[in-house]
Length: 370
Image 1 (cartoon, rainbow, N blue to C red):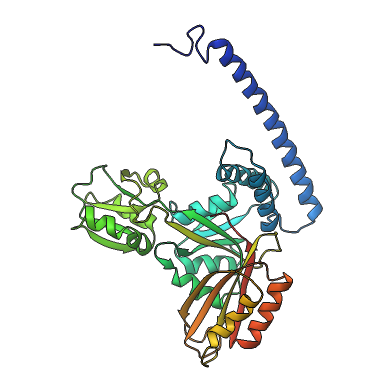
Image 2: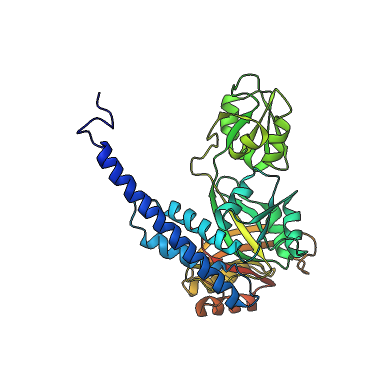
């Protein structure tokens, strides 16, 4: 058998030494460039004179440009993750960014915060989605990250209900692949009497659970991290959730990827007091109520079709109480391509408003990579 340090072998000491020297030189250059970038970011911060450091449209443009220019072999997702961490570290030199999310620690919502904002933020765990909204409304957080829809189980109703009445606007979105992990105090599947999980997680794994744990009780909890906390104290319980929760709560991984759909993803909204300026590749979310007339919903959507504007999402939901000040039974949530300031979309929205019983623009924001 030939080893790396065998004379004449590929990767012999002389060759390895030369390659490592090149890596060291590149690392030194990276450090100089990162320091230079951070210094310029500080100058930009001073030039803003009190304006918010975080600019969602600017960061989206940087990510998009580098993904498009990426020559490989790193993937586009990896390039995006690296540059978002660089931007996060530079942003933290100027101000603390506080982001509320559905806690406790170890949830997919916390992962979404890290994917969008990077690790150099103050992530504030909240007890429920309502508290995430309230944190930004009350000024305890600058942003909130909340789940809005899952590719397997559909819309998160509570988020849609709250956003109708809230003054907050959507300034970003995060598309997060969801891999459900089954965890408990030991790595054995035998002896599991109950499985904790958020209702969405239990629904995403119902076929796997029916096949592999048909007699285990399924117990819905407010978050998967709460399920992990409970499972950590019970020898016959397991929980679903993000694998990161295992280390946080002293659990072992029983099985990975127990979700029923391999392409399972959740879309999260980033909420703030204002939405984002145009970035060049944007989406706009709105909610509207139709008048009680035949064909009213079709008439509401027609201006988008006439303007050639693609609609990526249409969700109907019963109106809750009098939060909109109207008496119709259903609201319609729409996600379409473009920014509300784009001439074509602005004209279409004006026409929709003239036809709708109720219309609220929830925000325009950079489109995330799926």
